[in-house]
Length: 177
Image 1 (tube, helix red, strand yellow):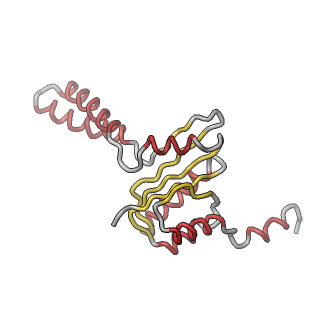
Image 2 (spheres, one colour):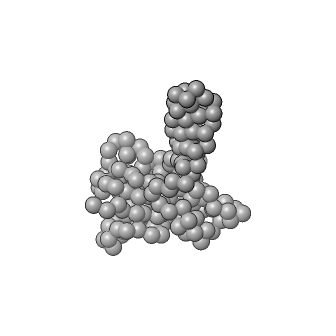
Image 3 (cartoon, helix red, strand yellow):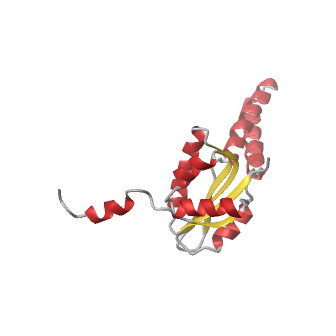
């Protein structure tokens, strides 16, 4: 089975992060299995910043420092081993790119208006009806997907849907009980 790719654009810089948090919660509930989920934000100056789920550089540095310290202890130079392991681990982590291509995400996000964001998701597996129900009313518009036309339409409809109670709550604003 191949992974499913979805990119959803939002008109602000926060909604993509909020939706990613929902997806991560659903992953803990075993409703979705994510390969990657990255938020790209285009700030007011037009600069694109990627917010990755996993910091591979830090993970590589930690792993490298452990192995470097261990090897250093064996050869009676623990600090030298620690420093060498830290540097090589950080370098290998920085050069490792798992999931969605960073250049692709930056290019697509740079085409959006400043002050907006994009959620890029690579999905291994999901429970469609429950995931769609959770994403209902979050807004956004699909930019790119690997979904069928039918599934793409279902997802866009869920994003566009108005949550029950949202229309009835607005007229009561400002009225005291």
